[in-house]
Each structure stands twice: as structure tokens, then as C-alpha cells.
Image (cartoon, rainbow, N blue to C red; front, side, top):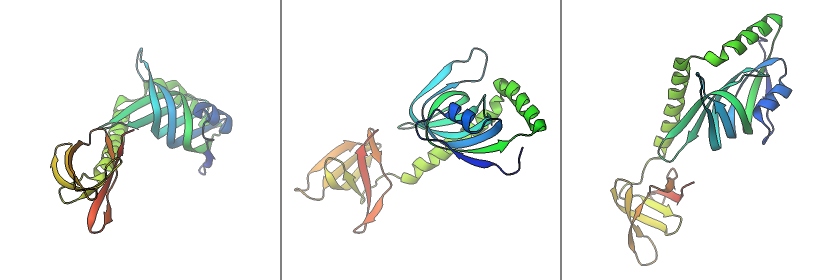
Length: 210
């Protein structure tokens, strides 16, 4: 492969496979970013086609520009992460950047071999990559933290409230304004954003879950 790859930025909304085939013709590509509406054929005999609704993180993509393209995708859920790995059939680019390596004659032979062996990609390799992607997603979730007694929350409906107690996913909160009304709420269907320091209190923003 050429020692100096060129950068290819995919147009948002374009089909990833087609855009790479057109923009990196004859080359070998590696890409990452964010996609939507992806369909992936999982590696294995009689393997099904997996569809991923909505947006997903493109952890890795590699292969000859004309295909097949092997991918690893992660989609965050409320309490976990869904990972799909296999051969990319289609996906819409949201924000995808690719490195394109130009192939010489010898490299073209290597690409042909990669094309033939893509269907029997190592499950162990996918598992290691999947585990790393999930661990990274979990680290991101852990960084947000969770409200504790003495903290405050900015609730999308109730406004600024003091946290009086915590019981699992439930919070006992009291209005800072409006008469000091006490409520008990569940955070199971809420999105908790990382806290900001305000007036000596950590303030977590609570919004409707996506």
C-alpha cells in the first residue's frame, strides 16, 4: 500500500458503500465515524442480515473500496450497548472520514486475497474489537455519575430541585422554588447529563430519554 494515504470525507446522507466505491476506486480504505440505518450481514454460514435503527458509531471499517467492507458498529441503548460486526451492506453517512490507500499491482493481489477471505473473518478478532468498543462506551457512561443527597437536579418539568435521597434509580427531590414541594421520581426513562457546579452544588440536568 502507499505509505501516505489520502483523506476522504463522505457527504452526509450518502450511501457509505457507494461513496467509497466511487471516491476511492481501486484503493483500500479504513474509516470511522457515525452512520444511520445500517444493514450488516453477520459472518457465518446462513448468517442473518442485521438492521440497526437510527444512528450508530462506526468503530471501524476496512476493505477494498469496491467491497466487501468489514465493519464494527456500536449503538448505545438506555442501559447497555448493542454491537454488530460483519459485512456492510448499506448505511447512510452522518459523519464519516476514510483513509484511502492507493494499491500497486502487488497490493492489488493482496486486496483480492482479502476479498476472498473476508467471509471467514476471525470471530476472535471481532470479539476483541467488540469488547474494546463496549468498554469504551461504558467508560463514557460512568463519567456522567449519578445524583447524590446534597446535589441538585435541573428537571425538565419541575425545574431546579434539591436531592434529598436516592433509592436505586429513584430520587427524592424538593423544589428549590415554588414552596419546597417534595417529590419522588424515577430516572429510568430520563437522560442524565454530566453535572455542572452552580452555587456550590453539583447540578445534574434531567431530560426526557431518547
